[in-house]
Image 1: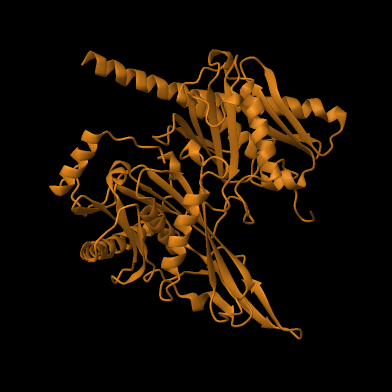
Image 2: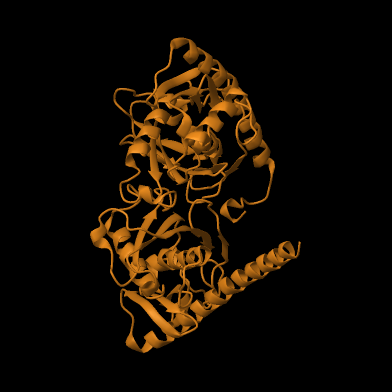
Length: 249
Length: 288
């Protein structure tokens, strides 16, 4: 792309961020009343809603039930107006189906599935506005929704993306960087165990650079974790304080 | 829709309270529930709005696109409705589960906007016989708490109010006329929505009828009439739904109350939208 520099000579990206800087993260848990758990999350201009239903009895054919653990059912869909060019279908296309599978795998790794045999948990993710990092925002929002629903989990799952531009690793890439920078690495981790539950790379990247990008992305995940965890804890403390007041009469 | 299972005494309670013009949540028969309207939340769209009516939550995004005119109507622009029932609202909508409801609502919307005075369709036509704007009105149903049709139509009207159509400059070339869509975000025109209808649903419960029924009340109602009503009180569309039947006298009573409510609703909505637009703060959306 001529005339467009993803990383300026002064070391700033197109949206004014430094290479290791995240986009602004804002979120709210419990946006819906009817769902068992829900969350809304913004990472820059990427906006995602997640809802969790269950654990409940298996819907549809009972044959799907797993006798020793919880069945996690996911659906990823994008609003038709979420992308720059209008999408014809909100779900059912290859990309959404792949994303659904990815989400399923990710959350199977972290939810304590053996506690709920023969039942089902639904995780629904809806992308309202997409500006790169859809998978990451979806995972982060779904984690918050699961916390809101009180589903037992080993840890948070936090996802972050990264790329490599001008000999510099960059994190939390937006749509422009996603489509022009070349390599894109997406990682989902359990931040407190330093375990990777999902990793994907598109396009090519020299092996020598891989570890540097990975380190940067892992740091990005840690940063996101700290942001989310801080607010979740604060809210919980506030709630506990109010409950205490109520109990004390 | 989360299934509402009401016992017989609960139904009787709702029925009796409606007869007394004091509904179970304290409203009168022609009162709406609390509603929040917000516009301009989705920056990827040309116009967007979110409406939260009690626990019914609707998000609308409009995208405009240049397209060849419909040869049968060469002088007007086109609009297209698309509704997606998000599984966030209820697991029953997963996959293709919401398609039935979606087509029902879009059919009603298309019908009420097919009236020629609803919006200025001729202003959407750029080159008569050749090019016009196509408005993709995409609706996302995020939570169902009763009275979906009304909430959707209010959100659509709000999004149309918020709609910013980029200006187009036309230059004559040797091959024909070239259209150049402005990419300056402040170079746009607005659409006049004063003729746009909102849908008012009137539910018959017992001998009385109510507007803006909650899910519980919808479960007690055997028949409802939906009307597209403009600010002036013109009826642009009408439809009866439900398993029960109505006599013509009660239908005309229902139309009368729908008209009164619709005129008031349109006025309030326009006032709120104008007030909101005067504010400078960025929309809070779901973070509220």
